[in-house]
Image 1 (tube, rainbow, N blue to C red):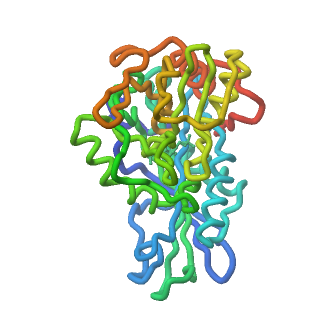
Image 2 (cartoon, helix red, strand yellow):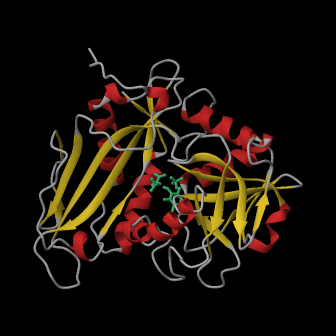
Length: 342
Ligand code: PLP
Ligand code: COI
């Protein structure tokens, strides 16, 4: 019998809670060990670990969903596994095999089944895989050893209010990534670089900031923890293209959904900040953010409002309903998107 946990599922926020078991595998002498589930949520590592000094670490984020039929499913975990491999290549870390990554997700979800929120609450089980360079080393070079770990937490919306529009502000003084830097992979340094800009945005009453391209500062790149999309007045779905933004799995899923499910024209292209009035609706998308409607964007001294600061636009709503429906098993998913946890 599954154990009972006392959680107010409908009022969960995006915050940490210790769950029962996490998966750990260690890399040493050129190979990964067999991996295991452990109870302890603390890692004991050398003070000279590269992850602590030189940011040699990467992570992922994906979710498990409980369906109406009480099944549990993962959304495109193989894509997260492949993206983590690209992060590993970028930081000279050993790759964790795709099949083992997906298997670790399933093991952790199964072992923490009691924490998978009930269908209908809107909450999900967020999985956080990460890899760190560890071992004794003080020079700037790749670590001699690595740890792959994957834990889970039940979560609610990342941006307060979920499907209620929020306002963002263009970051004027900080870039999150450099033109030929690490913006296209999911490494901790990008997020460390975003902390001040995020705080400045929140202090001014915005949900987060939006970064412009680091080379010319004329094009929208992405939000600190999500990609950007806009819907033009003639119903095109447009999302920025750039080597310095994270290739969001949600964004690529929405490009497919907009085209194949909603018959929209879709474009991955340049989105100039001076041309945002081409959009009647806009949103932030990502695993944690799901789809968060953007009420308005503050740029310099002007707030540009899209559909409404209080109501979600009809196309954003359709995109959300379709994505959410696929993730929770109510809408037929494209082949290969859903992995059941049995
Ligand atoms: N951009 C950034 C900087 C992110 O941290 C995330 C979150 O993972 C995303 C975009 C969205 O990516 P995904 O849809 O794969 O979660
Ligand atoms: C995600 O959406 O999975 C993210 O990684 C965003 C954030 C919590 C860093």
